[in-house]
Length: 309
Image 1 (tube, one colour):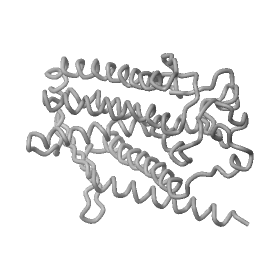
Image 2 (cartoon, helix red, strand yellow):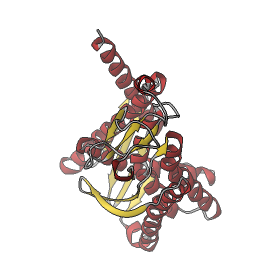
Image 3 (cartoon, one colour):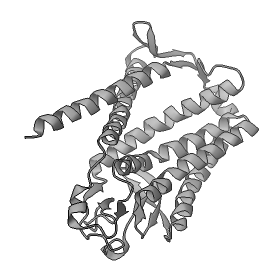
Image 4 (cartoon, helix red, strand yellow):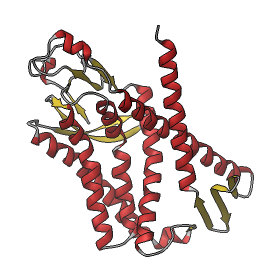
């Protein structure tokens, strides 16, 4: 989603010039698409583990067969239909909370890189905490509703809409991480460049020039945000490597791939006649991803420290 101020005017009497801007560039958009793809399958796995645990069973090994496509065809179509409903619900929840804060949202469909996406777009300015609620409400509300539905009617059909909602929240989370680094009294509105996709961080109403200059990112939150970004990037890299190994083996080998680090089994993919057996070391992969995020954040902090005079 995007938020804009009316006609680029001042925000509730605040300075016309933003303290800082956050812009969705093409490279950032590509990164968000990649994280969304990985996020879809990761969240589907996580919700699948919850569903299995509710039955007192284990999700793994995951066994897929060609016969499942014909047997589960109606179920798959139903899951896709629920996924579309989840996307619509996601944007409607955005709009509901935007309306609560005095906005009049519009809805539509756009294309990011090559992937279509739905959006709710507003024309008002927001307080930091207000916009955080607008951004994060769909992830919380739709996920809670999906989990309740899964408890009432335990079925894999709920995995697709839950995963679609989580993947669709990646851009919202990126914006929330950017906003979370600033004090609560800042205002968020239009990016100063009319054609730019993003937003500006503005001083609070009535702030003088000295107060405006003093607005800075909160150091601890900035480090955590960079850790989250680094974790997402590491997860995408790990997924690309593992998927690449599987496709390479399918092209030139047996289709069997086992990736171990000592006693850690990160991935086991075995292809038999018409059957795929898959095991994922989710905890180990998550540990490596978080470790990569910490390394990224520490390296960035060290670079900033060395750049200071």
